[in-house]
Amino acid sequence: MKIDICLPVYNEELIFNNNASQLLEFLRNSNLKYDWQLVFIVNGSSLLFQKMVQEFVNINKSDSSIFLVEEPGKGRAIKTYFNYSQADVLVYMDIDLAVDLSGFNSLLAPILNGEADLCFGSRMLAASMVKRSYMRGLSSQAYIYLSRFFLKHNFSDLQCGFKAITAKAWRQIGHKIQNNDFFFDTELIYLAQKQKLGIQEIPIDWAENRYSIRRSKINIWRDSWSFLWEMFKLRGRK
Image (cartoon, rainbow, N blue to C red; front, side):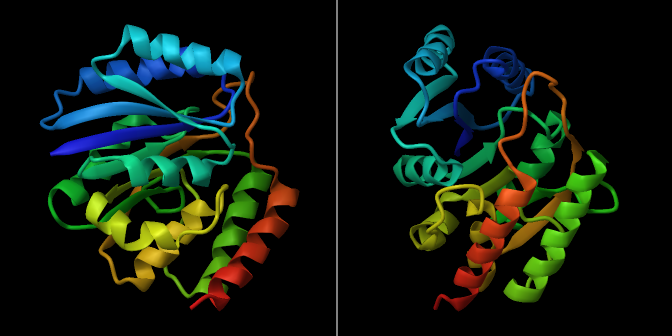
């Protein structure tokens, strides 16, 4: 069993070394019972940042690798690497480590036990611990309400960047995903549901603004309209 743990990264000079080191230390100390690799999918980034990631990988080459995608876009980065990977299970998370790493084993358990094809973290379950601004919480709730209406799903959180999928399931739906940016997460879950794959969501410990030096790449007002348009298009696809 081989698992690729992927982080799509775009010009994250301010937090990369600290967070990559923290994640790698966590994985090394977890006594994982399978072969794993930490993959940094560097997309559309500066040469300076590419060099930073490469230097980290050179020091930690036994456990990590770098994969370059010329154009930016979280969805594009994940799709490109997932299509390339030879792993049995594919995981992705965000470099800001907004999701506490204590949830990592819970994310993988349904996959490894054969109970799910896709598992993802949710900030909206009763057992989840969440620290975020009022406006971001409100926008997330509004998005879930609208997406349930338009896309006919019953999940509590689509956009959390903490997901795991079997390679077999990815091959069923990956080629159908069209979005190259942040709507990728919603499209992934929607198409998995359409294909009647086994899906589980788990509670997580999630904190916004862990790093005052870094701002989220999501713009609530701009991206809300974009996501609405993407939902209309997705619902109309056959």
